[in-house]
Amino acid sequence: MKTNPTSALAVDADRLADFVLFTQRSCILSLSSELHRGSISFPQFFLLAYLASEDYLTMSDIAKKMGHSTAAATGLVDRIEKLNYVERVHAAEDRRKIMVRITPKGADLVARMRREIASSLSDVMSEMDEEESDTLDHANRALAGRSL
Image (cartoon, rainbow, N blue to C red; front, side, top):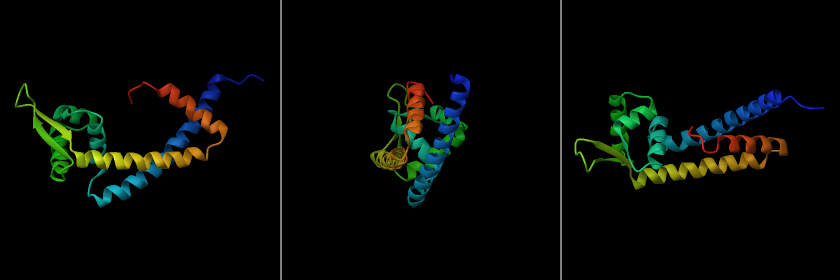
């Protein structure tokens, strides 16, 4: 019996959605506990995660990535700058242009949280059956190279 590719895709998408919801909850619980200790919010952590993958971001870059106004982005940066997770630097070509980059302390926080998330995901993935693992592998290949 031949399976309908559309229905197989829908089944895979449902399984992947369940995986994402489960792992998201697990990761958020882990993040929540860790971030509460450091008095940092989820949006602040997400900004740090963006900055950890870039040399720097301008305030307008931050506003765009975070879905905020430039004024709100400035407030967000102000709060995490006070915690020494980021620093502002002037652009070499135009000193009026302010660049924001992550500090070693901020990079350490992101790296530590990434390790915890990877460990949690590893635990979940180790308990998957072959069909679930195939679904995840298929989704990973489909998403590879796409900017999310």
